[in-house]
Amino acid sequence: MTTIDSRLPRFRSMTVPQRLQHLAAAARLSDGEARLLSDSGALDPSLADGMIENVVGTFELPLGVAGYFQINGKDVLVPMAVEEPSVVAAASFMAKLARECGGFETSSTAPLMRAQVQVLGLTDPHGARQSLLRRRQEIIDLANQRDKVLTGLGGGCRDIEVHVLEQTRRGPMLVMHLIVDVRDAMGANTVNTMAESVSPLVEEITGGQVRLRILSNLADLRLSRARVALSPEVLTTAEYDGRDVIERILDAYEFAAVDPYRAATHNKGIMNGIDPVIVATGNDWRAVEAGAHAWAARQGHYGSLTRWEKDARGWLVGSLEMPMPVGLVGGATKTHPLARLALKIMGVATAQELGETAVAVGLAQNLAALRALATEGIQRGHMALHARNIAIVAGATSEEIDRVARQMAQEKDVRTDRAQALLAALRAKN
Image (tube, rainbow, N blue to C red; front, side, top):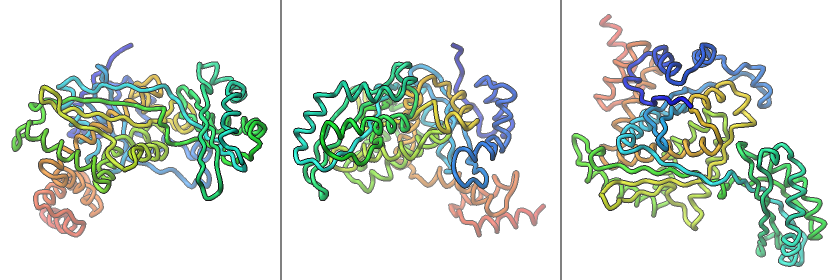
């Protein structure tokens, strides 16, 4: 397999055509694939019409590429679809620092998803649980009859779990979980179909009435993990010693670990990195978000998704483990031309590899936010980039955008009316 170089020197200073030319060469894109990125009509309306209902057109987001990522020793270019300034730049910069210390290490569990079958009307839910477990193999075999393609690929229903919820306002509930290896699919349609197919048998075994038959978006058996370690030297800035930066980051992390108000914003920053990867590859970012925040509360309080600590060398060590229900087949991942192209640029071969890449980006994004918050403050870098958006809103074009944005950033006064005044003054001189 050929390798690529994920470093993107001077990428921000290039024009869009120059960046596209660089990316096409780095990712070995054909002329036709490169044209998709420069053509705003990559998603044909007729194709979009088959994806969702009531289509009136298509909606675009900026598609950027985060560089410098090295994951398990392999260089990776990461497409990110996002509207928020500073996200791509922050992820790339942290990846550049991490690269000097060996990059990111990742791993994941098997791609196991849960489908839940809710059973009501039971006077003996614990006895019904035992009955279901006794006929476990019969239930598994029936579920696997519904997807011969999946079982042929080595996936399929692996096991069942049965839970009794004794105290509810609707009486005792029994909930059976099908545990399904969905391979390289996200798996929602597969597990939902299996849950529906076994429901008559569940009713026969328990004597109850089946109600809901649906996947769980708390994919706690389908985890992706990333780890990074950074030396004090790479974290040193002109204003701060790296050892001090590490202590400040650890203080900031601890705040998120113990306080849910801080944790919500802390975790949003992590998802700033993950969601754009999920969107760019045509995956269900709402499912990933739902699972992430449920996972963050799994210990009875809402806390940080990441963990930050200091090792024996005095290096900063960060880790992230979270549910990652993503796929390479099915849905928009296969339908949307740019989603397929994003996967090619990224060079991932399995859904697990995609999930691992996403959490590595999330960890990088979290580090960027913690570093900024703990030192210079979040606004200096963010507002400098936000100023470009305000300049555009004010009507600036071409070189005017940079000049107006730079002046607002220097003044620390980023407002539309200020941008309009600066633009008028600039044009008056010309």
